Amino acid sequence: MSASVSPPAHRQRDQPQNQPRPDQASSSGPSLPLLAAAPLLASFTSFLTIAIHSLLYHRNLYPSASFLTARAFNLPVHQSRHPAVCAWINDAVSAISNQLNAGAVKRIVFVVHSASSSSKVRERWVFDVERFPAWGLKNEASAAAAAGSEAPTSHQQPEDEEDNDSEEGEDEEAAAEVQDALNWADIHEALRGALQRLAYAAQGAEKLPEGCTFTLALELRDEAEAPIGHPQPWIPSEPNLQPPTKRKPYQGESLKGTATKPVRSARLSQKS
Image 1: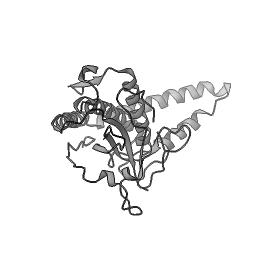
Image 2 (image 1 turned 135 degrees about the vertical axis):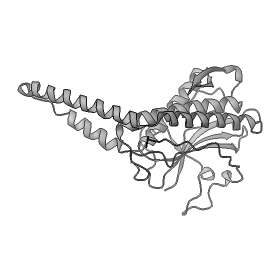
Image 3 (image 1 turned 180 degrees about the vertical axis):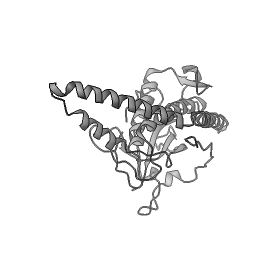
């Protein structure tokens, strides 16, 4: 299955809405220890949040006066001051993080629509995460929860406390080894470079007409399950916004003619 799903479009000065999650881990891509996955995912979601704010600013989807200047990844960046906009973005990125956790995401797309009733797609800013490291977070978390659910009896407690202390020490050592193995200098440099190139590309793009709207969409991996359930913050995209597939090669007409400009390839690496 190759599908695109998105939350309801966000319009200028509208009340933002929330977003998703499937629970199927991907078998593709390199495996990654759970201890390494959490900080890497946190760094990427921080990058994605900043990138969304940057696109809103540089594409003038909101007035420049509604943004403040901050610093992230040792760069000056722009952040919306509107609480509802910030909440919408944070909810969206949190939902995307859940999908990345499950290994379900192929691409993350920031979509700009025309203000007209046709909601024509004017721009698509695509973050290709197909090679994002995958890990068995769900299975490992479930195993940890199951182990923790077995309460010790009173006469076992002193011995178990010693075991717990030993396990905690081992976990801390393992975490330190993983953190030392990750090449954080290269990771942050790659993300910093991507933000710089993204801002440059957004500044140089043709000016958008007044009243354009935006939303976020996910293109799922072929083997991923659609993020359905209750509540269901993700909604299926219209067929004209779905990427073509082998079974449906003619869909996605609204995506045709869209120019693609590579920004930067950011690699999340480990020390050799």
